[in-house]
Image (cartoon, rainbow, N blue to C red; front, side, top):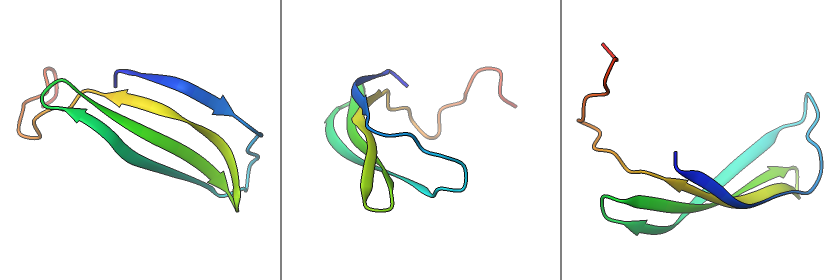
Length: 67
């Protein structure tokens, strides 16, 4: 995880509401970072949106401290 930008919360989400989170890859810089646009929906209403930055890792890479 590298950070979040332009996150906007439009309305609250309450218990027992179904929250659907969708993300789409917007840009990738090989070996450096990946940028995603994301949205949260309750029914047909968008309740939040923003951009997320992630750091790609090799799925075969060992994670320090994990057995």
